[in-house]
Every structure is written in structure tokens, then in C-alpha cells.
Length: 153
Image (cartoon, rainbow, N blue to C red; front, side):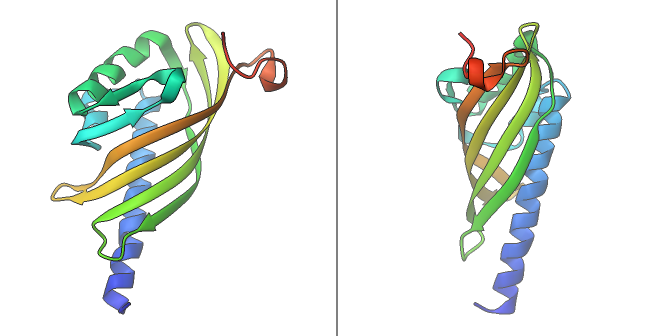
């Protein structure tokens, strides 16, 4: 692989990291659905599994985020250990991240622990998420912790 291709892949990974951090900041700033929606392709999928549901298409994703503030009055997304694999042509990529998120969910202090596996595409408007999969490992009350109660009822 020549130096230009290697540099393009490094720049792509940096752009994806910045986009993922923008996503986290927007979520922490009250889930503005229009701004979050701009980070996803029109045919994107946001899949939060049993805990948060699956939303297909940008309109459905925006509708989901419109409703988030009704349930989540505060959150702090710690998105860490990003591992990004950019395709050799720098047109697509896969990112894997861990999420540790203290939040107030329906008036209760809880911790969310999960792993993301995202698929990205490079568009004319920059990198966008095509598929976000959130694998929830624990959604537990702060006062009980994951040993006593790993998942909320």
C-alpha cells in the first residue's frame, strides 16, 4: 500500500473518531434529533437490541432521538477504546467501541455498559454511520450495581 493510501486511511480513522465523539456530545446535550440524524445515512439502522429497540431509516432514528429526553434527563457517554478498521479504498469502515454511561433514566440513577459495532460509509458530506449496533451488557441501578441487579426490570 502506498503512502497516499495509508495516509487516507489514517485521516479516515481520525474523521470517524471525531464523528463518533460528536455523536456522544450531542447525546449528552439532550439528544437533538436533527443534528444526530445528520451523522447517519438515509438508510441507516440504529439497533439498541432489547434494551432500546431497532430503528430503520434516518426518519425512524430521528423520531427515536426526539423521544429520548422524555426518558433520559441526563447522560454522560464515555465512548472509549475505539478500534477502527478502514477498508483499503477508504470508502467504508467498521468501528468498535466500549460505552460506559452513567445516566438518569426515568428519574433513576443507572449505569449503562455496552459495546458498539458500527459500520461507516464515506459520503460526499463526509463519514456517516450506516449501521450502529449497541450490545448492552448491563443496565443497572446505581444503588444496587450489576452484581445485585445486572438489568433493570
